[in-house]
Each structure stands twice: as C-alpha cells, then as structure tokens.
Length: 210
View 1: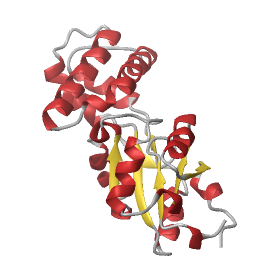
View 2 (view 1 turned 120 degrees about the horizontal axis):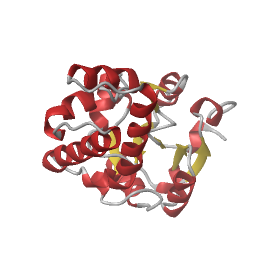
View 3 (view 1 turned 90 degrees about the horizontal axis):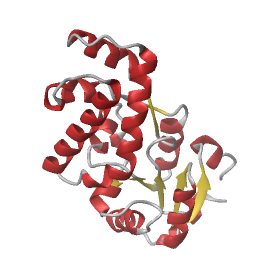
View 4 (view 1 turned 120 degrees about the vertical axis):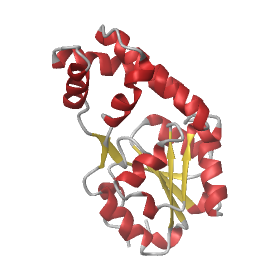
C-alpha cells in the first residue's frame, strides 16, 4: 500500500498506542499509608476487578462531572475488591495517580513518520474523556489533530460513530482513511465506517509502505 492513497490514519488507544505501567506497587504503598496492608497479589486482583467494571462503563465519563463520578465508582470497586474500608472520595486521587501509561514501543516513531508525509492523525478509543490527559503526560498528544473517545461519541467501537466523528474533525473521507488497532472491534468498526484497516502493531502495519 502507498501513503499517497491516504489522507488520514486513526489509531486505537490502549494496546496500540499506549500500554499501562504496573499500578500495583503504587497502590500497595498508598493503601499502606492509609493503614491498609495488602499483599500485592490481592491488590492486583482488586485492580483487575476495577478494569472489568471500567471497560463497559468508560463511555459514561463524557464530561468533567460524569468523569469524576466514574473515577469515584471505579475507586469504590477497587477498594471493595481489596477489602479496604476506605471512603472512595478519600482514595480517588491515589487511585488515579497509580494509573500511568507509556507509549507502545515504536508507536510514536512510526506515527511521526506517517505525519511527516502530510497525513492527518487521530485517536479513536473506547475510553472516557480523560484520554487526552493521559496522552499529554507522555507527550503523544502533539501528534494528533483529533482525539475521539467512545464517551464523547456516545457509542463504543465497533459502532462506527467514533470513527465518523474523528473523520469529521480531520475533514477526511472514509475511503481515504485507515484505522490501526489490536482488537476485532477496531476492524469491525472501521469497516462499518467505510475505512481501511491494518492490525497493530503500528510498526508492522506500515512496514514496507512507500
């Protein structure tokens, strides 16, 4: 495939663009500071329970007020699973501080190369509106003309709505756009929006392009 065939590339968030740094050590420390001593395996299990809760609820974090409520609810799920008798409001800042991301190896460099060819870049992710905040912390936000989340679009992938909103913002027709992601919902959503698709990782997706 040729870069000349594209005007925009959209990318998935988690697993394609960013990956989670281990939150367990930070959570263990924060709990201990509150007088709650928990084994790391217990904390890891509790965090997994929070992730399972968060994924279908992500699109509810659509504005500052609902995002704050979502974060309190996620903190409550974590604390309950960890058997920690703490008020979610008192621990939400510690919980959110433990959630840190880094770029997937090679992702930033690959996207810089795509952008240098005059191709618009956007993120399309099943996430709350706090995604831009996370991207800003690792300096990845500078690459994108649009960051569209399921919360903002009001629908999660594989619904085509987030893809269509991203293309509207970068002013590119679906036939001139490609989405790269690591899950079936990425491929299905891109197809429903009339876009091309390439599976992650990004380095492999664009290898050999001219």
